[in-house]
Image 1 (cartoon, rainbow, N blue to C red):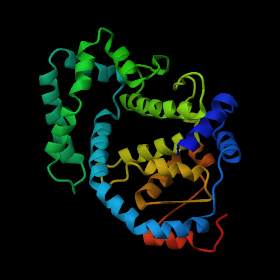
Image 2 (cartoon, rainbow, N blue to C red):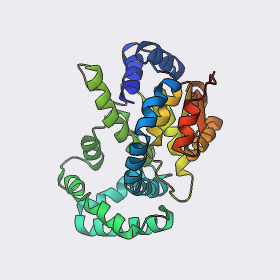
Image 3 (cartoon, helix red, strand yellow):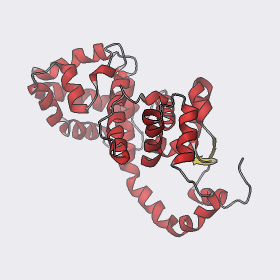
Length: 289
């Protein structure tokens, strides 16, 4: 995934390509060499039992993270950054009281919209807030404005920020910046890049990630542990066939109906019911065009 992102940044920032389809084509022809599915099946079969065990061990952790992200999205879906900042100012007055109040609201939201299979959602909300207290303290002690402090702590270029953008988009900009820092290091570029220099809306793999996220947030309750699937789904811009689970498949189908950019750069996707079905499909002699 890092190689894909680095190839796209190279196409956009260095080669100055401006269309997602052209960026994807350049990235594939210049940096990426994908083997056939059949060639990948043998090593997959050998590690399949171990892989299934590891996935099961991580399932609860990803379920928790998926629920936390989901309820936060519900809360901030239609809020502008300007509106969200009014609440953030409260943390500067009394961190402990503000954190306690937020913890209660988060716990209630988790019980209403979190994954039903998780136990003790209130405790999950409390532990999450406990882990954020250092960040609240940083915000409280800063002499900069709230917005400048949030941009500085997240590494966001304030030139790319608008108070009329959604708070959700601001948070995603922070996620994108952390990934972009890794991609710049991978390419060994002599300067730091930000959303202002490399707009995320032009990178094919990021278009896929955002469309999956937009579709996922529309559901009333988090379900499953598919939060990380958007990373792997980025392969769908390059591979002849990309296998995804049923929810991710549905999310991409929804995205294709509303996003011209996604339609232009997405190749073929398919869904399977189990890892065994996945191995059989990859082992199929049928050529996917």
